[in-house]
Amino acid sequence: MSSATEANVMAAPMTNMSNPSDKTVDAPPPALEPAAPKVVSKWAIHRRMYNWVLSFAHHKHSTAALATLSFAESSFFPIPPDVLQIALTLERRDRSFFYATVSTIASVFGGMFGYLIGFALWSAVSGFFFSYVFKEDVFNNVQSLYQRYDFWCVFIAAFTPIPYKVFTIAAGVFSVSFPMFVLASAIGRGARFFIVAWMLHHYGPPIKTFIEKYFNILSLAFGVVLVGAFALLKLLA
Image 1 (tube, rainbow, N blue to C red):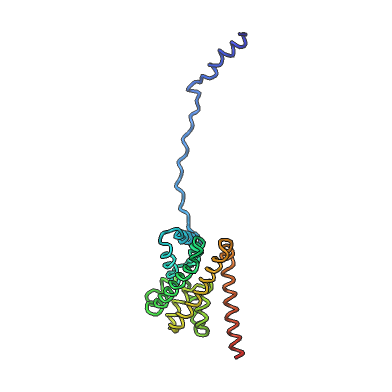
Image 2: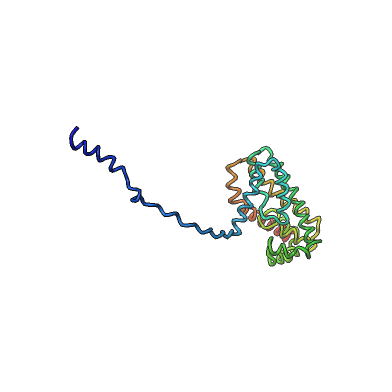
C-alpha cells in the first residue's frame, strides 16, 4: 500500500469524528400563534347545505329524505329538491317518474303548510322569515302580483326558480283562494319535476350538466311564453 493510500485510510476516521462542542444545536421552532377563526360566508354555508342534501343520495332512507326536502323547500328550506331528485334518478333511472311523483306530492303539501303559516301564524313568525328566509320588500311586492295574476303567480313560482316559499306564505297572508292555490301548485310543481325526470330517464348522465346549467333559464323563458300566450288568447277572445 502506498504512503498516500495509508495516509488517506488513517485520515478517514479523523474526518468522521466530530467534536460535540462543534455541533450546531437547532433552535426549537417558534410557538405558533392560534389561527384566527375564519369567517364563513353565506355562500359557504349554502354550499355545505347543498353537499349535506346530496349526501342522502346513497342513504337507505333517500326517498324519505327527498319527500322531506320537497316539503321543507316549499316554506322555509333554501335548497331545491331537484338537487336530490337528480342524484337519485341517475342512480335508478327506472324510478325517474316515481321520484318525480314523490317530489310533487310532498312539495304541494309543503306549499299548503306554507299557506297555513301565512294564514294563521304570520303575526308570530314574520320576524323570523324576514330575517332568515326572504326580504320584506320582496314579500310585499308579491301582494300586488297576487291582486292581478293570482293563478299565474303560483304557477310560475312553482315551476321556475323564483322562490316558491315566498308565494306559498304570501298566499295565506293575502287570503288567496285555497283551491286555486293548490291547483296551480300541483300543475307547476308537477311540470317542473316531471320534465326533469323525463330528461334524465331518456338521456341519462349526459343531460345532468345541461339541466344544472340551463334549466332555470329555460323554465323562466317557458313560463313567460306560456303566460304571454294565454294573455294573447284572452285579448283576442
